[in-house]
Amino acid sequence: MRIFHIGFSWEIRQVSTPTTAQRIGKFAYDAHAPDLTLDARKVFKRNILDSLGCAIAALPGAPFKALRGQFAEYRGSGSCTLIGGGSTSPDQAALYNTSLVRYVDLLDSYMSPGGLCHPSDNFGTILAAADHASASGEDFMLALAVAYEIGCRITAIVPVMAKGFNHAIQLAISAAAGSGKLLGLNADQIAHAIAIATVDNVSLSCVHSEPVSQWKGFSPGMTGMRAVYSASLAKRGFTGPLRLFEGPNGLVRMFDQPLDVDWDDRRLEIVHQTVMKKYCSLIHGQPVLEATLELKRKHGVKSEDVSEVLCDIFQTGYDIAGGGGFGPKDDPQTKEQADYNLKYLIAAALLDAQVGPAQLEPQRVRAADAQALLKQVTVRPDAEFSAQYPQALNARVTIKCKDGRVFSKEHAGFEGGLDNPFTWERTVEKFHWLSEPYADEALRGRIVDRVSMLEEHSVEELMQLLAKVSPVAKYPAKHPGIQ
Image (tube, rainbow, N blue to C red; front, side, top):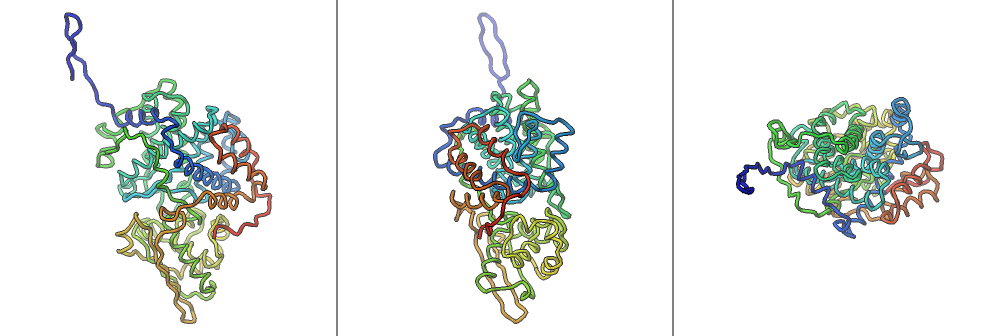
């Protein structure tokens, strides 16, 4: 409280400290293009192209036909172009785009001691907001950088999943902030957008429990839908609970810890700490699959040779995908169960020498050979590996053959990790692999070029190319997958 002398009278004014939501709003508003360094821009273009590849590969998924039907029933056409053609409203485009990026489980990740998040869960929402706002490529990339930074900074501080919550909570904050920036909100309005989007988006980590449902992959899309709509409401004067964090029953109490993030730090560099995937699997499975495939190729192991496979992994990987805390992994039947199941993923790698979108198709998951082989796989937590997580994602795979041969490999890290990051060239290869059935070579090349020079083009120009992608496979798929 301060006392001000005004003429011959005195006035008492309450000077309030900005809330966390307001400080995040100011951080988003204050971000400008020069804050995004040349090196960060290069990495963001890599992640943007990676997200587009993931999205295109998901187009024929049955849920997306259902979503298009819902869009037509509820609202029809709108201001946003859909990947694969058509149009809809910004909020529904956010749901659609985000779900496409997540669907084949090849998107980027950010690791922290308390868990992880997928920064590219922001991508579809920010793309929809940018398309609706007729934004430049430069503005789109800056808003995406803001969203990445917010979501990852919170993930670094709060072990959200360990406390029973899902990382869609911080996604609501980051996606609303990035959307608000693109829609022209001021700092206070962005704070209100964050509060509106997040207060009703308390997401629970039980979404990952067995039997894993379709909603695991679509929850981020619903969060994005809420975020862009909330930003539009805040632009029109709607207010939200600004004490979202500090309030008597706010996020600080829910998380049982303060959120000590320096929102005055304007750096937009967190993208350098994101990791990439080359197999359709949760991030914890990447070293496991690299080790399995290396053993298979080096020693000529055939699936019919195998009598038993042992997989030792860090505790978090065991809990989520090995049969630990989130439930048994003995009978996967769906895509959603398969990509969170190390037993199935190992079996698929030994059978098919690859783990891509085809290995997540329900008919492949339910096939007799896959179901029989996964029952020969045992996953165990390893204390030493657990102590090194998440600084290192380590695994040991041991294959025992019926003729007595035993092959074992302890594997530290993976291609795409912080110690061996994906290059732009490797990402281009992954993009062509994923998009080959849905776009001819010329169109794929134009999309790659457009992303590589994103600052020089509008989002509308990018969306015009993405609208030409076929929503169903129509071109020969020759790429063997990322090896």
